[in-house]
Image (cartoon, rainbow, N blue to C red; front, side):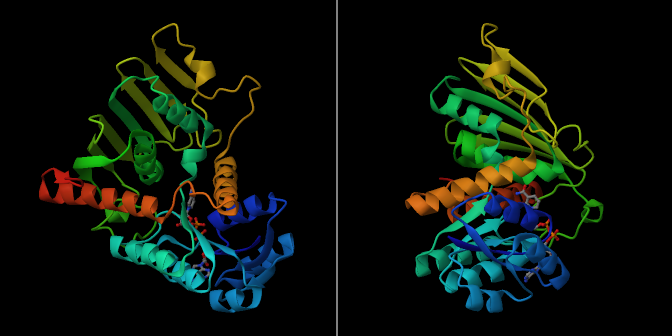
Length: 329
Ligand SMILES: NC(=O)c1ccc[n+]([C@@H]2O[C@H](COP(=O)([O-])OP(=O)(O)OC[C@H]3O[C@@H](n4cnc5c(N)ncnc54)[C@H](O)[C@@H]3O)[C@@H](O)[C@H]2O)c1
């Protein structure tokens, strides 16, 4: 499979590394408007460097393109690549407005190509184990979920909520946010919270009946904890505490009933091997490529990416209107 990466910053470097680890994938092009960045990646990988997406698509004819430009720069590049006949794996959030995300999904459908969004947290082993346990009914009915996240993990947390607990029916929220306190300019502060600066507290009512409480703040220490997550079900309760960004495994696991060996079950591997965020990019990209090759549904397609944005928009609406916002009838 011939692949190319547009945007050679932090996320682009992760995608490049992940593709290089796949024996049946050839990285043919790397593109960045900052041509020095593209050139450096090209020298390190043997791919050709480009400063312009259209030129790269025409010359290299990749089958798959990773879109790793900044958040508000995804739409144009993704649609360009789809229209050139490529499948697209786009960094999250897929777009800076719901309308733009809808355009991306519609374009993929129109041209018959696959659009995926990189929600790599789903591929962190402890969350995957949690999903398996929920899916096989180990928790009984999940009644209450508490997530406390660093602001950088708020957006991913919403995807995890969708992944683990299903569809969101309604949302209410209290937010204390200052655009000036964010560490970079976000283009749609009125529509999405994305990286809450000071404090955000949200309650989601899920179709299953579960209540999910998510709080996030930039004032938390990301180095110490990305997020804590507690799941309370009728048959089992598990709290995963202190997942640091350097090694995304809980340093503390509380489980009930007491006979449950939560520590072994929830990802603290017996061999002690660590799992970095970089590993989650590799796992997510590998899963996307393998699904594409097998002609199977990809783990997080454009509709899943669009869903996250709709939930995020509902959070902001709920706060502004001071009311509960319904997403599903
Ligand atoms: N999934 C994750 O865990 C995760 C982690 C970090 C970043 N991200 C996402 O990855 C994306 C990129 O973030 P980043 O931190 O790498 O940003 P970055 O600023 O480090 O890199 C973006 C790069 O894109 C280039 N660029 C911008 N417009 C371009 C265009 N039209 N054509 C070619 N190149 C262009 C810029 O010059 C820059 O080098 C964002 O959407 C971000 O949210 C995801």
